[in-house]
Image (cartoon, rainbow, N blue to C red; front, side, top):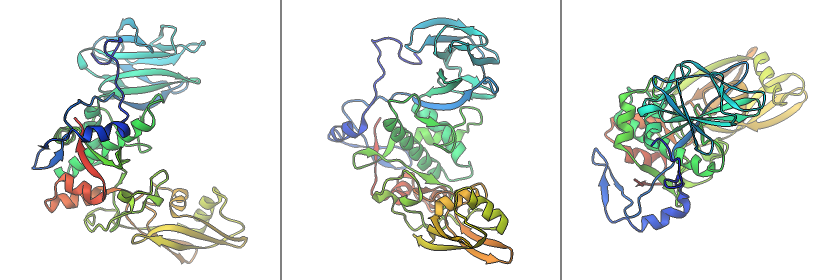
Length: 402
């Protein structure tokens, strides 16, 4: 079955923070995952995870989403009652005037509809093929389209979206463990909500089966069930592209806990990254306009000063000097106002130059957790995925939960 539809086969949700200590008492041996990586295996009671729930998009009246499947799909209600089968070929997702979900004009008078493809064929949303099944759920005047997918399928689809194929296999495997652990941490926090993760950088990038790569599937398989834990809980395994020489403390990322794995480590392994060093030129007008959006300029902008840094250059505080006074803001907030697409990280220096500013920066991303380019660099030095993860998440433990 794709999912449980009766009381005989209920979905088991694990509260890992309370289960892990008991499970750890059942560790009696180690399992060799591949490439001579040994990770403690939890034995005794088997751990069964519910599917990951990924919000793909909202279907609205003005921007409707289309779904397709090569074979018939089975329709269930929100409480998992069988409602029949339908064929869908570029079928429009919409709402009736009474708030019922419709698919290609067909309505079952329900605010939630579940579409389960036949024989594990997957289901298309637009041009993208997704494993698992879809839950279509009314949200205001729109429909949430949520993909329910098995954990290892999810991880296999995340790895190639978050890391290029040219990176080392050890880096791919480290990415798989980080992605799996991050998902589980979010699932624990959001188990009472309707979805666990977004499909983009608000969580981690998930592109379904379309564009998936063999190296992603291999990385998921080689690390199946392996996770990072800290203080008996799944670690929110944050990661980023390039640290520029030293990863950042948790203070650089909103929501990151102040714990040992996020205190930052020295990293000289990401120098091959095109974002290891970067330069951005900005006019005074451009900077003033961006800062004005956050209310940080009073009068005319005169200067920008970096006043506090940590961990080899990560900017904690910036001072904005204008004719109306001085204002301070966090380095990460300054970066967001300048535009994260080209202002690659909050590790930078600012110099006034004529009618503008020269920003010299290092790294790409928030800097917390694993440096992806650094992980690949460590892989080239012969480090395996466990050694990479222990390096970047110092103090965290690796354990294989299934």
